Length: 342
Image (cartoon, rainbow, N blue to C red; front, side, top):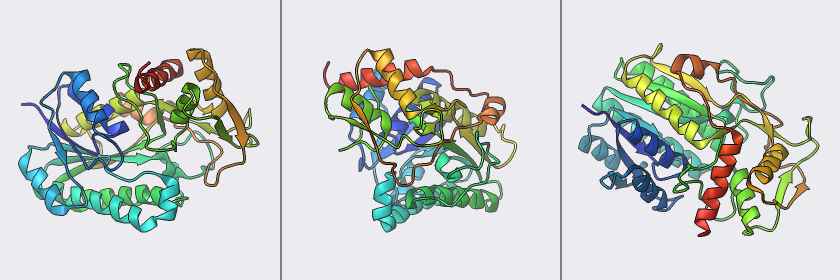
């Protein structure tokens, strides 16, 4: 019998790619989203890629406890992957209560419904932001977490703690995995789904592609005086499809009962640092287009360098990032051209 995975926030950038990989791995998927930060194009793109016109879609707010319980009652949910959260760092500083209320309440509603149902596996979408400015790189899962630099980051830390405490107290009714993402970029190779920010992008690659296609005049590179080889920040940029595949490995690990502990933590990254300017230069080279850019003052909250040690995910989950940065940046450009009708 097929297993069913609920993907909360499943119409967004990461959620849509994860839904594709789950369907292609043979899972049944229920997509739930309130479309507060995306439109229906991601969901429609998933149906085109997979040929699944019957893909269930539930429009709902996960802050509505009754709606969450009704969702769990309607479908035979074996696992839930929780993406439904606000995610703009700057906005979280301006509107902390909005972020705490939405991100914490929505996740607690999911956990409460999962616990009541029993036997549900919970995968939480966490972030490398929990490591702050690390004392040493690369970071492992044992690297100490540091105080968050924003309310958004703090919600990730708090949700990690909430999941671990709930699993511990559940008496075996719940299992959990925390996936700490590094920097997801790119788009599906089909160019039918990708990152679609509303308004001015907060993330680097959409700003690069929008500048290259002429939507933006110039890319600001924030800071060129960091203690790195070229003075720009270093990050672990991971292809969105590789990241999505990691969710399939994690869900399968939970459902098959292969976990070593009731709640596990994995870094999901490539293990390779790349600077902002290295990424810009690689994009220009692989796509044959220019990205007008200038250096701007450092941005508050940006850390110098962080990248993953993905050994644990490689060895214990059997997952590894395989797509090259060239493949990733080609896909990102193809998606931007698709949006522009080119």
